[in-house]
Amino acid sequence: MDDPAQTRKIELLAAKRARQGGQAIVEYILLLTIILGTVTYFLKTLTHSFDVGTAKVGAKLEKQIRTGSISVSAWSK
Image: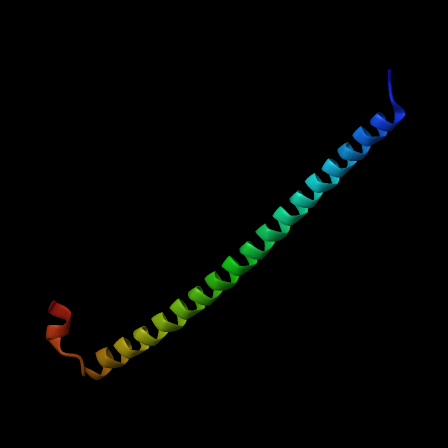
């Protein structure tokens, strides 16, 4: 009843499915790593740009306030 050739085919198919499942997990982890790296890079760049921009705006406002070169109407709006 048990055909050794049939049993061997089933074992080979099971091994192939296990390898493909492992490969899918590795590909998923690699894709997640790439996405997280890209998001982290862009967030660092965005944060840096925001910090630099905020410092520049703050410096200009401080200069205008110290020298009195800003008009009062600019603050009343």
